[in-house]
Every structure is written in C-alpha cells, then in structure tokens.
Length: 230
Image (tube, rainbow, N blue to C red; front, side, top):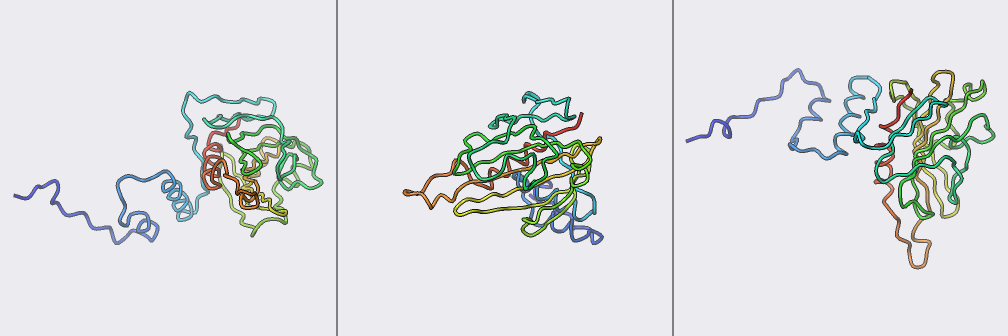
C-alpha cells in the first residue's frame, strides 16, 4: 500500500517563477548551512533590486558597547574583544578609516578584534567617525587601491551605506578590507572589516595561522550585524 505522505508527488514549480526562484529552489536540501543562507539573501537582493539589509543575529545575552557620544551601539560577539585604538604591529595604518591617506578629519573610535589575531593573521571590525565638513565631503570616496573598484550599496541599521573592497600588499604582508561608509546625523561613519597578516610560507618552518581568512571574514560580517544607531 502506498503511503500518502511519502508517495505523494512533489508539486511542479510554477512556470511564472523567474530565474531567481529557480536558482534558489533547484535540488534544495532541507537543512541549509549558514553560508548558504547568506548567499541566498544576496541573490534575493540582486533579483529584487533592493539593497541588502543586515539583520542582527547575536544572542540576547551578548554584551553591548554603547557609545552615546558617537551615536551608535554594537554587540560584542563571543570570540571577539574590544579595543579603543587602531595601533597595531601589523600592516595597516592607525588612521580613523582604512586608506585615509592625509585625511585626518576623523577619529578611531572602536575595534572588535577577533581572538587569536597575530602578525600571521589578524581580523578586526573597526569603526571610525568624522564630524566636520571635510570628513563629510570625502566620506564616500573610494580609494585608488580598490581591487577592482567593486562599489555597491547596502542598508545597515536602517541607513544606506556605500560598500567597497580594497587591498594592499607589501613584501610578504597583505591587507584586505571590506569597507562601509555613510553620512548619518551630520557624521561620517567609516566601518572597516579588516583582515591582514603575513604569508605563512615565508617562515621557517611555515607558520600556522590562528584562523583561516574566510572564516575570519565571516566572523566580521556576523559582528557587523550587531551594529545599530542610537
């Protein structure tokens, strides 16, 4: 005897579905890993023409840093710690935003540093704020080091941000930045997801990174979801 619950044929996809729906539905397993869900959200945003929106996914018990003076708060995820300066011993300046050059019209405010960060591999979410006219005028500038200049727009904490990717390298060192810029409430907010380090193979014996670069980037993007304006 056929089991009506297991032998029932699967419904056919509607012919009115667009390409985006077919990409999302074909041969889909029931359980999706986190990276697939993030990729799915990106596909949906590109298909609907709507900017991507970051939603907080941190547990309610996670500590929150509230900076009333600069108008924002951010959740501190497990596995990250807070720094209030950008002075480090690895590649990348201590300026208020990555690739700032001579632009000193802002201040470093807060960094969430991934535990285990070292000169081999380090990862940080940095927040810098500039509130004068020059900072606002150049807030959305994309540096010449964009590789290539991939500029897009996302919604973060209800505010439209410009996002770009930039990188730098010197000898055996590298710097990779996913940058977010927005003008809100008279301030320029510069948020950088920064992964930097040294190629492990230049050491003898080769060094062991504390974490993989892609894993670090995912941690930083998860942490970004905990950012909000006051």
